Image (cartoon, rainbow, N blue to C red; front, side):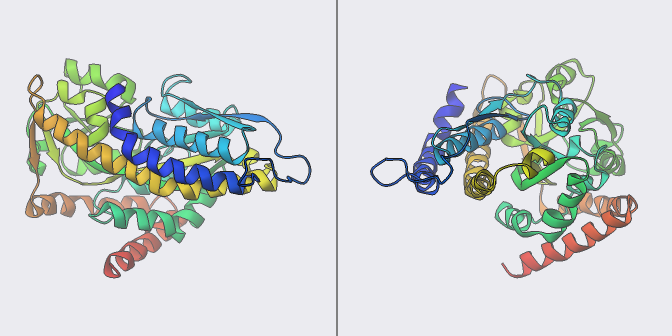
Length: 361
């Protein structure tokens, strides 16, 4: 944990200082530090739980902690948000259920673990869909009508309100053997999240997908129960998967998209002042989240390459090699469109938005 704290110092602290100052003004504090008039006496004291799928020092947890700090500042210490590490309240699927039931107020969730609840959310499982540039991907996530209106509406029907969609970086493959061509996936036991579309993507390469919680993954890789997995670089290094996998392929086949979500009933019942604080904080977290993942993924790729105790062969696919996978991945989009009429509309709109974003940049 200590190395991750040091790694984040320059990025997060500089952004946090500026946002905290801004938060003081927005929360009703004057330049002398005295409480300004909050009308009805200010925000009522409250405590919220914010569950994540990762541990302290990893991207989601650090996001949740920064969110908590900003909300604390904005509310003059009245709103205390408590980040929860993965596993404290069960598996990824358990956490989604707790959010729906209102047992926790906030959660960072991955669509791969909500795919059985909102099937249309599996759009993020489609490989080679988003731009080959994280800045452009985040632009799409920020402004997409397909996601922020259409898909969000479907999540709200099951008591989950996505407040933002954001990237944790490109996904990469690790394996017990090199993964450079689709033929290398023939019969390969690939760990996946619990998403039918993720499974179909790997079946298209000839692999055998195996859904598994990441809490069980290190042991499964170590014992050979599965042959490989996909995750952003920071997660591969921090979860020590490189210790039990000899090969890593920089494939950039997908972006790991996370959702900051709130229980819909809770969100709709917030006071206007508090809801405005939440929405402001969500906007302020966009650049912070991007900087956190960018710094972690760059720095920890170097650590993997330079790790002499657990040497890992790191291979970057050429564009020609990526194209062989892309050709097999694109037909899986038809399976997504077949989920529902809403899914077809979401993907059609999203593809247009992605194309427009790339063309304009």
